[in-house]
Length: 343
Image 1 (cartoon, rainbow, N blue to C red):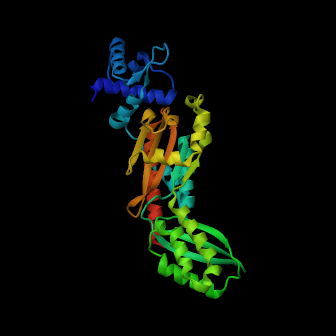
Image 2: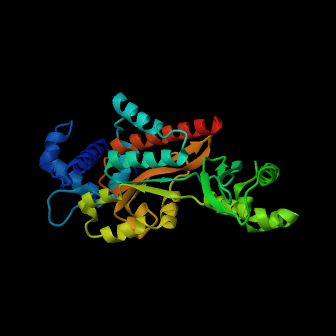
Image 3: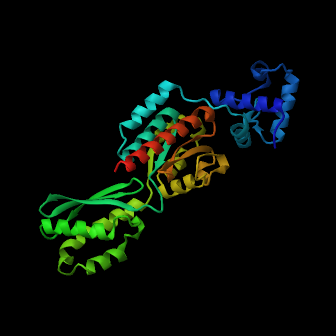
């Protein structure tokens, strides 16, 4: 349902002023803020109508009004004018991210760190979650006579490594045999295929080398399991302490932010392409009922990679923050794609 032009101007002015001040907005302010000449009585009538339609709330006995969840939604969908980044800000963000280009996990962590700083909210980034990720490269690096590091790289940018301790000295023949098996068995195949059954079958086929080499493939299976399990990187949780809207629910909020699985589900509940804004009860979990989530989806070589976004109060400067999340998502997509095209 679209509102009339005058109601739209009043709603936009209330949303934008409330975002700035956090105080209920009255007709006196609107008389000077609106681009048209309207009497105080007419403004009050329009505000009452907007409240009856569910776009405004009246806190306590105050004469002023504040946006409701429905009011924010209408503003974002129909009235908001985005505040784009200027060239200096674009360059600053780009330079910060370029310092981590080539290392996907550091890049995503830096993106979250920048978002937390820019938005004064809790920022999150999820590792690539493409279910079709394949094994791109596996390396074995000798560290000691009976110690080796196994490194796994996937097609979606995940790099995992772990130290493997052997029962026998690591020989050149064992390393060559390992690489031969890797090339013939794993490279180009889905990471999700590397599980206990596959490793048991492989080890059984090694014959006399089974005892010596089985620890290497057990570690590889564990790395594969880690790689297909999406991780959530959180930055700036302490920023939420600065928002008075959360004063009565801070403990529940902080507990929720510690639960990776729930965070993943909350992020996945939004659009799987582009950018999504979930306001209040639009969020999946009760702990987020007084928050807004703005989430962008980054891509790797044209395929869904993961998410970058923020959690904050519903009183967010959407016009300013949405373009910044879109820009960060665009840069991360570009840098991750370039990283894996070069490898």
